Image (tube, rainbow, N blue to C red; front, top):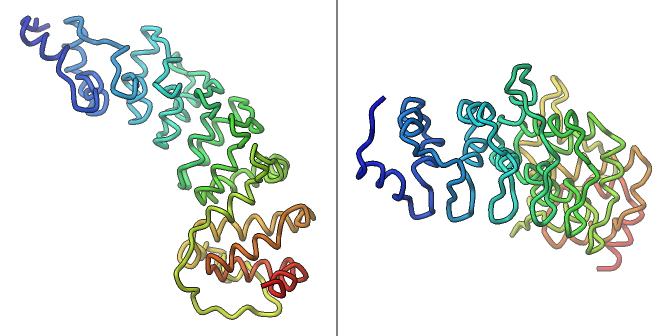
Length: 303
């Protein structure tokens, strides 16, 4: 194996990017196994290199789905419980990047199989709470990791928020739909769970729904079925992706569940109606008129 000169070693050891990324950080992102062997044979692989956020090469490997680098770390028994400046682990990095790393290692039946811990950062945020910010249909794989690894789905952070608070704030209806399918009782419980400010995920959903400058023309019928706006009558294909905003889609699915569970009256429906009017959102008004006609009429009269 080629031996690097002192000057070459000095450059590779001390040069870094403006954000603090070292040579090994960059190598993990732009993977080249031969380059890794060269650096390793010259003693230049520092597994504890830190960028400006105190993230290690393993944080980058998990984010960028670098399985080979991670496998090497497993063989060498490198500590995976390394923390960045906010206390996040490589497992958190995989979640926030929506990388498949956690799912792949969980499903592996070789010596590379990893037990995914229910890790929390310094603010008490779990791996699932990190992933809840990302709106993607692939979020089901992260939920599967949490379920198989027996993570605490009822966990709350230092603000008293569960993962559905974050999903609702970001309009992540994909995660909500997967929770309803796999653990419906958990979804029912979490939707009613209040944070330190007294807000449920449903409250968060309406509060974080973006405003529109002008309400789109839309006649509120006396009777109707919200599903006509969500699914094609012919093949059941999702229509709401083209018609509704992520928060409006989330609201439609949530209201249907609350009605099914007969717990809609546990929530501040009048406030949701007023928020929908304030934000000029016609579709939530349509659903609320269907599901809570009395509260809807009271809210309109109070204007």
